[in-house]
Image 1 (cartoon, rainbow over the protein chains, first blue to last red):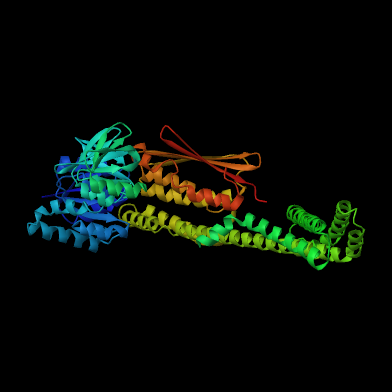
Image 2: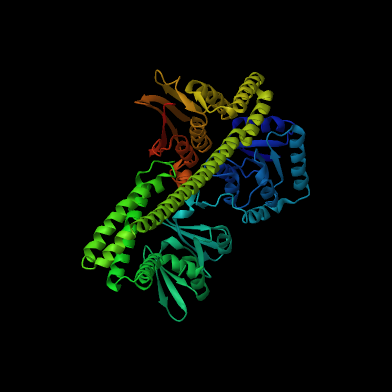
Length: 246
Length: 346
């Protein structure tokens, strides 16, 4: 038996999926979700083999939702937006259905899923989330998970990001959050006029800086508004000077 | 370039030097060529030139300040003609006082009166005329650049209008809903096809209309809202309250629509659960006030600020009415309220 979860904020969209799925008695719809938050919960509880995922949804979108899941199941995107298709395929999605889609097109997607499942390409999920890592869908916020809670961090509220083993620690007014990404990723995706790599382990939001003090030979310390001191390397100082125009 | 900038900075100094040289040259002609006493030649030149230059400057300022736009060009020489007579008389009185003891100089002054007048007139007419031309050119340049800016903004607004009307995602999502309805509730599918057709027909027709009644606009928006209700499983509730007399009020197209679309975007697309959107119309003095409220999710929308994408509308209002106070937004208890005021069509 194949367990499927439908994630779409329009009931009629789920309706058509269910109606098409009647042809496949092996595939059971175990849950239906109205948004990404519900989706995260359902995937953790139900451990489905396959999800049908809309992209534009309330609260968090489909891509952001996938980022929060450690081992995502196979994904078939269903959306009216064709501009995300390339990203979805790069993310190794099983298929990408453009609304409205025909039953024939839907069957092809299911066949594709079944082929992959039978060929035992079960572990494409890890690859999925890693490729996704290079494609943020919105760059004004970062979605993190703390325990079972999902937290949305507006980029403007970030103080700095710090490398921490395989994680990045995102420090904000409300404390620190861990995200399973590299500092390099955020250096590439956040606005370079706002975030400067001042040190191998630090990416600093420049409007948090109050002053820069010299420290030991050739290195500096950036002092933040809350008094926190961040080490600045020689090359980091050069980048900082360029951005600040000093 | 640096040299030009420097010269521009010291232009007053250059002007003063030029005037001084000219006065010196004038004095030299009087002394060396016409045999006037050196002291008198200096005073004569100084008084003559400073007087004609000051009166010219006065004329330039007066013309700049008080000449109505499109004033006649002959006005400058005509004014110069009379003022140069005054100038000659004043100069004569002044130099006679300075050179009262020198009979030969007094005779010289009297003999040269017509020459002095023509000199004053030429200088004044030349200066005032060229300044009028200069200011006229500058005004024209300003008008042209203003026109270009307005044209660019109008073009942008047109483009925005087009994009608003096309809304491909809305259309595809509707078609998807119809596709589903055909399977599950065919009657509703037919109704939605009819509503969508009427909505699209009005959308296309409206491309050339600029002012319509609130009643017509509301009919159109109702079609849109009914479609959204079907799409989102009737979790949308719209409450309207249009005061007596508001429905016949003429409003520009595409003012209310973005407000309602915005309310849908943040209120319906952005949240889960039941959503109530309210739309009210009131007449306040000579304005039609329209208030739209929608709930929003502060956790996910807070990062977008309070503008909620209404800047385009603000600029359009400015283009239409040259006013910046017609759109107000307010956020209280996760309810976003926007108030739009529309002046009466003149």
